Structure formats: C-alpha cells, structure tokens
Length: 346
Ligand SMILES: NC(=O)c1ccc[n+]([C@@H]2O[C@H](COP(=O)([O-])OP(=O)(O)OC[C@H]3O[C@@H](n4cnc5c(N)ncnc54)[C@H](OP(=O)(O)O)[C@@H]3O)[C@@H](O)[C@H]2O)c1
Image: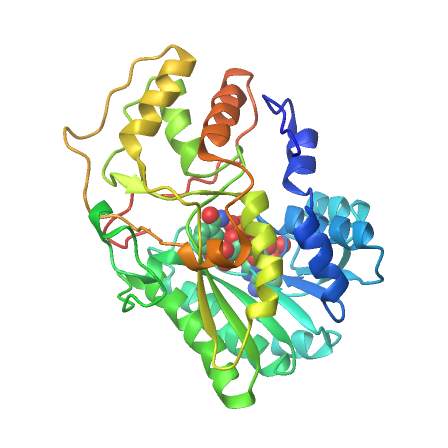
C-alpha cells in the first residue's frame, strides 16, 4: 500500500499528493469514452482535479485531452494548468454566445459557482448558480455531466441522524443554498428534457491544507483565537479523494439526474478537532460559545463509499498534516469556508 508522507513540506508537494491517481481511477480512464472538460476549473478544487485527470490518463496509456474552461481571473493558475498538461480555454460561462463557440465535450465536470459575499449581491448569485447551468445544460445536452452541488441543500440536522442521505427531502435554508438547489434543478431539467446524463455531486467540505474546515479551526487554535463552535459537527473529505470521486462519478450520470453525496465517513465534533490541534500545537483552546450548536450540515456518503470505497486519506492523517502545515508557516488561501453558518446567511 502507498505510504503518504508524515508531513507535507510545501505547496509543490501538496499539489502532487492531491493529483496522484490510484489504480481505480487509471482503470476508469481506460473505460471512459472521449475527452473531459472541467468548467469553472480556476477555483480551489479545479486545478488539481485537472492535473489528477491528466496523470490518470497518462498512467492508463490512453489518448484523451483534459480541457479546463474558466474566466481565468488568476492568470498564474492558467499557466500552471497548461504546465500540468491541461488545455485551457478562457470563457465566461455567463456569455451564451461564448459558450456556443466551445467545442463539444463528451464528459463534463461542472464546478462553476458563486458563494462568498452572497449577502447584498443576491442577483448575481442567482444568475451565476441558475442561469449558467441553464446555458450549459442546453449547450451540452449530448454530454455526460457531473455537476458540483453542495450537501447544504439538505436540512440542518443533529449528529444523531447520522447525516442526510440522498433520500432525505431537500430543505435549503437561505438564498445561497436555494440558488444551489436552482443549479441542481436546471441540470435536472436538461436531463429530463434532453435525456442528458447528469450526476448531482453534493459535496460537504473538501480539505487541502490551504483552505477547508480543518484549516479554519486549526488557524483559530494556532492564533490563540476562540474556536467558533456555533456548528458542533461536520464532515470533511481530502480534496484528492473528492476529485477522484468526481471523475469516477461520470459513469453514474443518468437521466433523470442522479444525486450523490460526497464526503468522508466520520461525523466530526468541532471540539474534538480543536482539542486535537491544541494537543499537537501545544495550545489551550477556548470557544465562542459554552455549548456547541446542534444544527449542522451533515452529509451521509454511504452510497459513494459503497460505489468507490473509503477515501484514501484518513481524518487522522488530515489532522496531522494540517497541524504541521500551520506550525511550519504554510500558506492560506484566505478563503474561509464559513462552515460555522447555521442560518443560511453566507
Ligand atoms: N470546496 C468545497 O469544499 C465545496 C463544498 C461544497 C460545494 N462546493 C462547490 O464545488 C464547486 C467547486 O468548488 P471550489 O471550492 O473549487 O469552488 P471555487 O473556488 O468557487 O471555484 C469555482 C470557479 O469557477 C469559476 N467561475 C465562476 N464563474 C464563472 C464564469 N462565469 N465563467 C467561467 N468560470 C467561472 C471561477 O474561476 P475563474 O475566476 O477562473 O472564472 C471560480 O474560481 C463550486 O461550485 C462550489 O460551490 C465546494
């Protein structure tokens, strides 16, 4: 079995580890027909997803192109993708004419979305999360699409429920999450109307050391700030595992659209994580409230684990890597998850 390193020294090593394919993904690339396009590749998860796909294709010895489509507001991210073997195309997906000019892509991972700063810019959030999926669903009606969504489309629940499954009735709280349900509905509409094969990938919290829920809690502990415990429990998954599942899930895409929860196996207590970080870092923890909140976004990913197995990177490993990352002065993206929000106001 592959042994992960005890610590991750720098971002070069981090990106390499995030982009390492395993045999399951390599075998999948041998089966998959056609090229892959990642729409909205320029964010936190897209670049290493593109590189993971390229690496798996190389290891499989097959001939496929991975396209990365984004506005590329970050020009350096575009160059890095090219260096990693992803063919980039600059396109604003809000622009219907520009989307019409894109080549046909048989396989699409749709990642574009808008979350942060929703308050005060609700119109833009709805346009981004609902109009763009409408445009993409029409343009790529003959493609197979895994559309990134969020586990926050489910109701807030307590840990005693073991988390929401794909059968739990949806109950999105607040405008951001309602707009995410709108994104799902537009892909669902394309699937129903045109027979497009769609998978709705409901993710709760990917982790990559530079951002994520463990990052946000670890940063508070490291900086001697009170840990925000308004949300008492959460789930996380290593970004490399989340991206691997995103690719594999193309095979589950169907009409009508199929939902799939994606996260790690644990329901994790906020205070447990804070205490673990404190012990490793030699810190003392305080909290923002005496009793942690019981209303949480909890995603039960039993189906994904039945289909694809358990994630390769364990929670214990993520805790150790994350603590060491802060202690050695590792970089943060400065993009908080806002996992502490339990009233829908992101
Ligand atoms: N990360 C998580 O833990 C998490 C959890 C739940 C759900 N999700 C969802 O999963 C998806 C991927 O996550 P992420 O963290 O990588 O998201 P992200 O950092 O917000 O990245 C999405 C990227 O989409 C691109 N984009 C936005 N508007 C676009 C447009 N009009 N045309 C073309 N590209 C556009 C942007 O890059 P450019 O500036 O280059 O265009 C943006 O960086 C998102 O939809 C997110 O909401 C993520």
